[in-house]
Amino acid sequence: MPNKNNLMSLPTNFWAERDFFDGRAARSFVVVLRTTGCRWRRCTMCGYWQESGTPQPPEALVKQFEFAIHKLKGRCAESPEILKIYTSGSFFDDDELPSAVRLEILKKAAELGVQKVVVESRPEFITPERVGECVERFAGLEVAIGLETSDDFVREKFINKGFSFKDFLRAAKVVKSEEACLRTYLLMKPPFLTEHAALEDVVRSARAVTFSDVLSLNLCNVQRNTFLEKLWWERHYRPPWLWSAVEALKRIKEFYEGVLISDPVGAGSQRGAHNCGRCDKKVAAAIRRFSVTQDLNVFAEMTCDCVEQWLKILELEEFVFGVITDHD
Image (cartoon, rainbow, N blue to C red; front, side, top):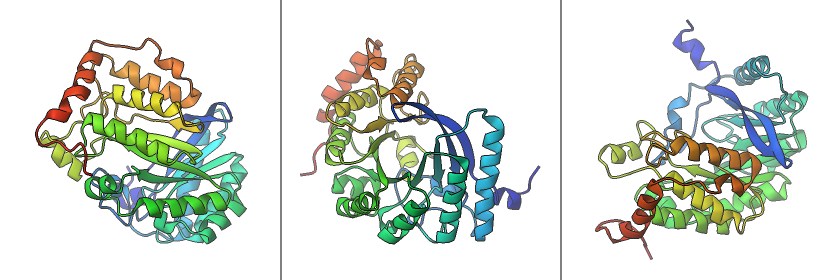
């Protein structure tokens, strides 16, 4: 069994999955590198900082990537068309991935034959120089930013994200001007929002960022050792209903022409988005099917006895004393 030091030199995780690409479902590889992790580490719902490791030399980071790709190619007969490279932080943070490492990994991505590479970053690390040199190395670059909400009050007070909508717009402009694609993450049901307020917030946020090439609706889940977990244990927070996610996807698709996706992580568990328990697997599977087909018909005639309960919650919870519905 590898010792702790050896584990720290391995990628955090890697897997293969399906994504919507070029009008169809396509194979993608996902690699989560073990870097020093996110510098911010203060978001109320995020526990990904726990996956970070100690600083490593550049060659070790490249070896992590090579290790993951080697294992994935051994598992999958089908070659990937998409490669997602995550760090539980920011791809463009030089303290996580120096420029030379970024360029070497993108070079290897090109050799792998993928058509799109997805990376993530906070806005403050996104500069024309860093994005530009990466696009020169790999033209099919997609940069994902965790905006979460277009509402500065919700993002600052409830999520503690550490940047403004204006900061996001600046970074988004850089991404687009350097001819990379933009993926925007929106968070479904941050802490302190009712189910109804959360639904309205995510739809309103989607309207504010329709210039994104991809919108990813992330259903909030309760990660360990986070402020959100404390709220959850004290019964001050419930993850979103899967019905709310379905409704949000339907409403956003009415006005958004780009690719709309959602991966309901932890769906059906008490820590993840869930309904009554009886229909969770069916609804979560439909959300995943929609993400790789963009076909709203996957939700047609989908129902359960708990739909009435969900609708009643949307109707009545705004009258519960102490909930936050409007901060204007």
